[in-house]
Image 1: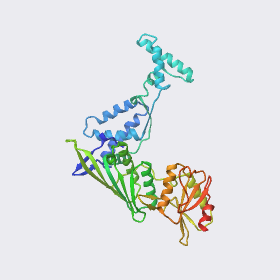
Image 2 (image 1 turned 60 degrees about the vertical axis):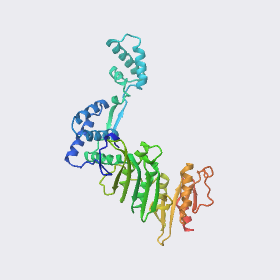
Image 3 (image 1 turned 180 degrees about the vertical axis):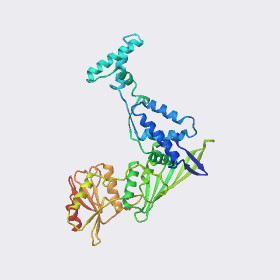
Image 4 (image 1 turned 60 degrees about the horizontal axis):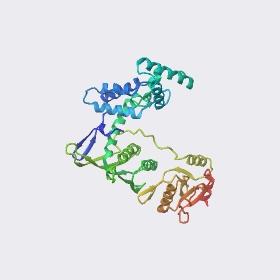
Length: 405
């Protein structure tokens, strides 16, 4: 994502409009020029790369655009490393200690570097040149780090990343965000809710799978102490939304007026027809090896029961529960299966609280015997679900015997 000083937004009344590039020959030419610059910089220092980028920016009025594209390339596609015969701080101590024994002059400097290079060659059992010692002294400074690898994107994907980053920057100053996830494939909801949890966003969820969900998220400016980190977390959620088929959102922004420095309110809306392109990978088929193993073994069973992956959602007050599997019989019977194999007390307490609130009469809980439920403060006396215990792996036959009983 882009830092605040590289965001380009304009305001129409209360509406905020972020800068978005067209994927045309002009934009692609600029993107291609910058990508070529980074390719040529492989093996050179970050300082040399920055100097070349400054030359490309020149004094043109679109310097901010070029700087933003360069920032995305540097932060998302480059690998800079410290290249030195040994840890730079240790190397400095070694060189300076030896240099302190002689008067400072060009000859003594060359002698010191040659001596240290010879010592390191013996110690490391490989040739170390005096120039490598010289370059390694301050190799840990950002401008001296070497561009080791550049995973070059296509010009089109760089333009798409730029447009997405400009939109993400809007949410840095969000006070509240209301997201409507309309009726979608349940697996898409699962991915969305997983990222809500991953980014630790404070959200209130209402709705169901048949009609969609309304998700209210507190923004960073609504907190007691406005948090830049929390604003970034909301911005990171936006690429996830692009995996969802149908959605819309609206957010209220609290910003400083450029001229008066007073707080003012802004608004921004976005929906699934926005044309943005995500760089986040789609969700994994299974959350764990345990689930994947169970699904593979189920396919080998000779049974009429069909195993479906994350196709049902159970609404509960303020949240939603998505069971791992649904088991469906041709005669219309169906069961929901949730595998509980994660051990953290907070997770277990939340999971069983969800089960109680759901009050679902066709839910099966498969619980690992390795979990210390008592230590986590979890009691199974009033859990409204059928329970199956397992050790290392959940066997399909154990589940089959319960649903057929």
